[in-house]
Length: 113
Image (cartoon, rainbow, N blue to C red; front, side, top):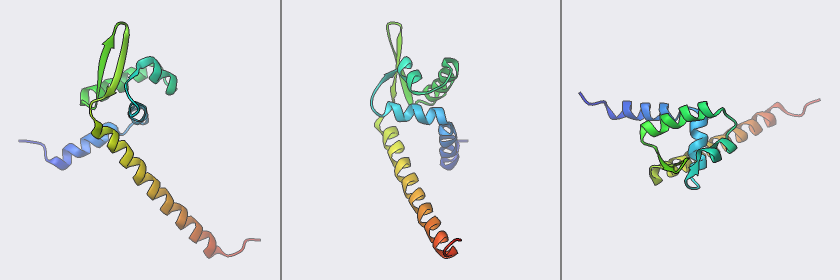
């Protein structure tokens, strides 16, 4: 029996649910990057980065290409970059709303001594 779409979406977002994976995807939005470049940008042990890259590769969200001794990673498609941009827009709106609420709460408290 096929997996319902909502369940597949939940599994997709769960796969994205790691800070290192999100950072990798953010960095790859600008174009392909070798592992050493990713390591320079993300403070993480090489083995831990390799593990997170493997998750992204297995999911098909990134691809890797070997160039001699260097392994270069890139996004599998432009939709991933668009998803990252959409997430940034949503978070910006959420945080702006929180700041407005915080300002309203402070105003409601009145002057402090």
